[in-house]
Image 1 (tube, rainbow, N blue to C red):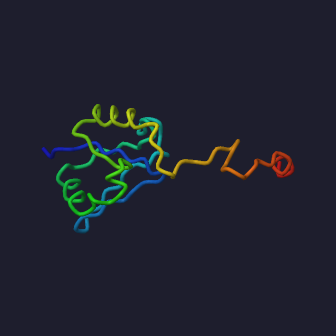
Image 2: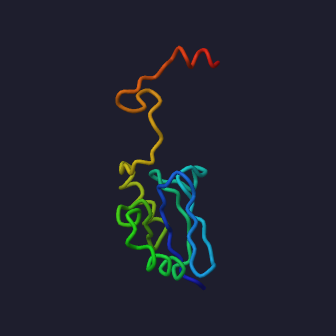
Image 3: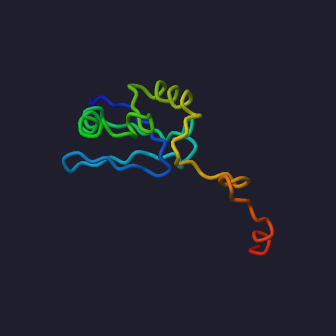
Length: 114
């Protein structure tokens, strides 16, 4: 039986990993509630595949900064995702009330759109 890891991914969309023609799609954080914890999509991945992928991409900023991480168990991955829930990486949705400094919400224009 193959050993697995649970991979957390805080990207808004899925991330496709590829090693030697084999691909695995990681859940992004816009998945069904059961696949997201602390803003991280969780995916079970074959450990040997992930280790091979990590040996190629492990120095990427999204790995070093914790946007994508792996744990040996689903419980450990959920715990890490909850601990890092407040981490901001710049890919979060904009606030509808205050999108960005210097930009004001235009309620009148929104009412006109219907």
